[in-house]
Length: 85
Image 1 (cartoon, helix red, strand yellow):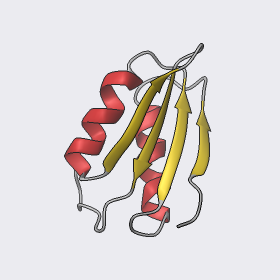
Image 2 (cartoon, helix red, strand yellow):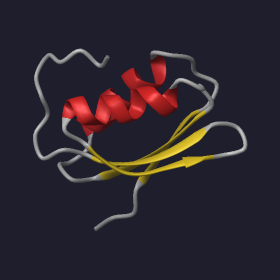
Image 3 (spheres, helix red, strand yellow):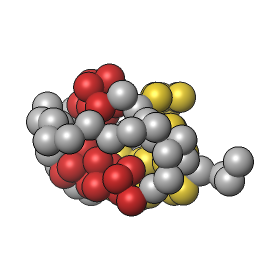
């Protein structure tokens, strides 16, 4: 399997980290991995909730000096027209 794609979302405020993560995952192949970094304090709640709602696997969550780092495995199939929150 290919290494995770890194996506820097630092500096973005809610709801942009979730919306941009959703869009990026839609561009990836099923089961591809995406590592995102955020500085939004709400991302610690929003990203896990988003993954749960959309069926993506949240492989790891890590606090960093400036925010959070998440490793997500894309679901096999994307859910149509779901609200990211």
